[in-house]
Length: 309
Image 1 (cartoon, rainbow, N blue to C red):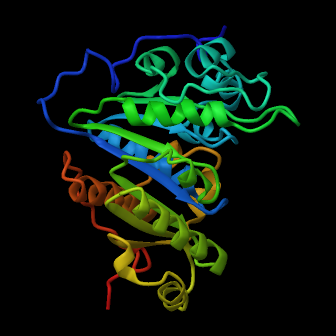
Image 2 (tube, rainbow, N blue to C red):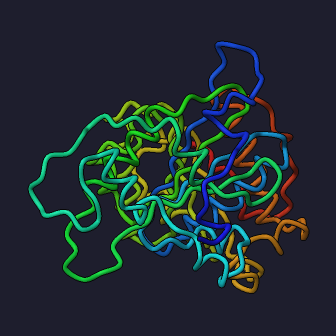
């Protein structure tokens, strides 16, 4: 088994090596929205930025497409060697009563013990940053991901977080994961869209479902804003601004496209897009009253928090 699939020790959430003040919770952040709007890019940038600020970050790839590793900076040939939790058939079967080859209709253990999953299956990305890949469907006709979602939900609900611990969950396209209550108990939802009608419709639906789960802080990030008239369209299509904690507009940045598929080259550029991500990280940490991220100045007039007037 390659180093990217081996069990290993970790100093992330759930491990006794962490020493913090008792009684302080970290942040659980779900990144959601329509497919193709930049969710994984924003997840990866936030993960690196929180880690650089001294937070201990666990980035979880809950998208069956499994692109978060490469976006975080893992070389593609190494990312292909990562063995997702869902592909550890014996572990999955032991925890949930079902595995990738199980027949439909079997009984699932709905509250599996997941205390060892981060220690066994997360991989190091950078200082203070680890990645856990859940996996997805790799064979036609293999059925639903019920066992995998059961395990993911248990992981997210029962991993203890202490002060300065951050979980970032990258989700599949669309709001369907909210129906499985995967993000139940989360602190914050970052709903990503672009200025299109479809993307903002999905954003409104995602925000409504997040509120039903009791997620208190819901931030709308509208990516790839390229024209002055986009601002008015966003106001019209996004519904009531009161539905979101703040609403952030991000200008289209060719540097993001040039750096694709990873975000690491962006981090050293000091571009307005990266500064806007720092601003988003600061807003999350201040809004959720956990830790502190310094608030940068952003020069781009199109990259801003949209006021409510």
